[in-house]
Length: 153
Image 1 (cartoon, rainbow, N blue to C red):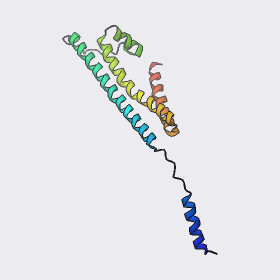
Image 2 (cartoon, rainbow, N blue to C red; image 1 turned 120 degrees about the vertical axis):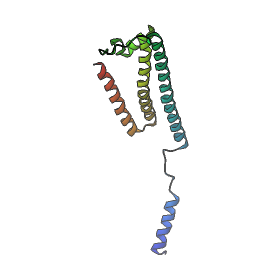
Image 3 (tube, rainbow, N blue to C red; image 1 turned 180 degrees about the vertical axis):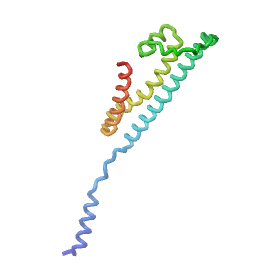
Image 4 (cartoon, rainbow, N blue to C red; image 1 turned 180 degrees about the horizontal axis):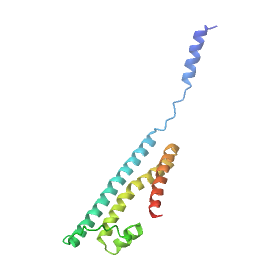
């Protein structure tokens, strides 16, 4: 017969030896995948902004070469022409050689870059089955799409 205290210690040691290591989502494969996702998103933002900046700069230089010597008339405000109020109109203007269309295309790419970031984050979280972040990014994506559609309705 063992005293109760000693029996309790033996059971405790036995139960501790049967413990399995806790499962963790931070496996090396998951950490490597997260680093790849972060690197991809970082590159997406970096190159998206860089591409948009270059397009706007080239469009601005071409616009100034053609219209730089024209006197500006500030007596009345001229709004954005209707052809630049939709992505299709901007692409049509760029294909027809419009310099303002090139500037608008750069701005469109600048706006689309963070939206693409949200889309890729949503797809990555969907792949990882991380439902908390799926819901958060889905809400952000729906808000972005709703605000963009609202501009055309």
